[in-house]
Image (cartoon, rainbow, N blue to C red):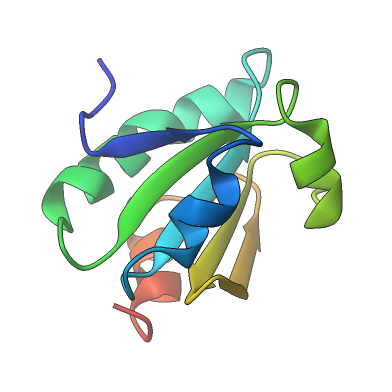
Amino acid sequence: MASENVVTLSDDNFADTIAGDGEPVLVDFWAEWCGPCKAIAPILDEIADEQVGSVKIAKLNVDDAPDTARQYEVMSIPTMILFKDGEPVKKMVGAKPKDAIMGELAEFI
């Protein structure tokens, strides 16, 4: 079951969500048919629950929002991009274990 702390993004709410309130936002670019995307979903749910107030976790289905995915040059999924103050500051491509994701986020949270 997905975490209530994970925000579902669309083209309509993407810009407002990543602009946020100063809290970094990790956006998971994924698709329903992507096996590795499904594999990392529970990891991102855990991070969302454990890091409330430090980092916001958001998911964008690339099939539903191809223009946004193209804008951020998402060529393969899963791709996770960390946004700080609306700007991309870190990009991770491929499924990674929780400790690797947290290591990538450490300098920003």
